[in-house]
Amino acid sequence: MLNPLPNKQLTGKAALLWALGAIASFHLAYSFQPLSFAILLFLFCLFQLRHLDCGRKAFYGGLAIGFAIYAPHLSFFWSLFGAAAIALWLVLAFWLAMFLLFATRCTKRFGSLPAALLIPFLWMGLEYFRSELYYLRFSWMNVGFSFQGQFMSLVGFLGVYGIGLLLAGVASLATQMRLKRAVLMITITGIGIAILENTSIERGTTTDKHATVAGVQLEFPEENAVVIALNRLIADNPAAKLLILSEYTFQGVVPPVIRAWCKKNERYLVVGGKQPEGETYFNTAFVVGPTGEIEFTQEKSVPIQFFDDGLPAREQKLWDSPWGKIGICVCYDLSYRRVVDNLVRQGAQAIIVPTMDIVEWGERQHQLHARVAPMRAAEFGIPLYRVCSSGISQFIAPNGSVLASAPFPGEEASLTGTIDLDKPGRLPLDYWLAPFSVLITLVTIPALFIARLRSRKTERAIASPSKQNPTLTSK
Image 1 (cartoon, rainbow, N blue to C red):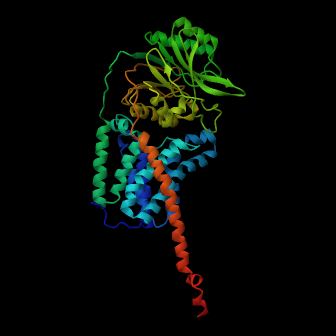
Image 2: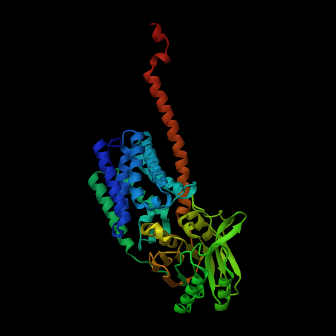
């Protein structure tokens, strides 16, 4: 089954074809939901490039591929950052380039088959590091987020990074096979993924702990507009005792008129605003109780880089609501697994996400952001309720199914649902596997670097024998 030619090298034409195949497969996976399994073909094509004859070609090839796959999907960066978007696209592409560089070095140093076994862990380690651990961390556009719909049974066990590890393992081993067998393996795996993606897994409720929740999309509204919207919301959803508004609904703390409304109508309200802190502020989700008092606050854990988004949260904690323990992620916090991991470790039974996605950022930005929430719900096995300023708001079951949504653009669009808080969430396998892969990566990179230095030293010694043996010169 495995390729008996462990040290094969790619020609320039073959490398170009594999690179184009990787680019095309990535765009298919991220653009057409029925073809999301094409992400496996992306990995297979990409991993073939580890057989390039030098690391420099691998690095610059990876940089070009990364730019070609990330820039089109993240074109809204241009409207946010102008020409600086080019640098941000290149930052993302840099991690793909580094992966190919290390994969090429591993293949040359250890041989093709040992490298094929190591490469999936390098992939996971670098993907987790660029998504979660460094300053410009950005988790969108990873392998796991290419999947939508009902492909959630494995997600609930492995996690989004674990799915990446699994698919990278399949693709890496496929590169060791003859092409026909590799295509057969990729095809069978793709069919299996397609079947899983369209298989719904239901989870029954074991207790009567449930909350009827309603939310409405409002973007930077006036106070009186908020009151009107809330009145309409409870008129349409009289059973809803917990109401949700978006991040930055208010540019300060919750106004007295809104707190008075909560008291008059005996409702809980989760709403975004600003908690002043010296000359700056904390981007905060406030929970106003039916007494009109603020009962709980959660600050944003990871403010968005390059934005005026406040200070990082001083701590994360759960809201001990009348229905159960609820974790609150403020907008982009949901994109970070480590933020949600912390809430689940504390015993969160549901997650509420007040979110600001501005209309002018465009539909593609909203669509990509909406990929995150179903994955998070499935990973931890808990319901999730996300209300955005202009869409795409989502009510998601513990299996990752989107039960209700509000569209983009959708000013004053609302959604409602019943959140079951029957049990706390659980941590997926990649909670442990991802840091382990980072450790393997951090050990491998210096080892490759040292081996490279020794190799160059040996090459120089062989090329200059007279310097090593001066007697040869005298003769």
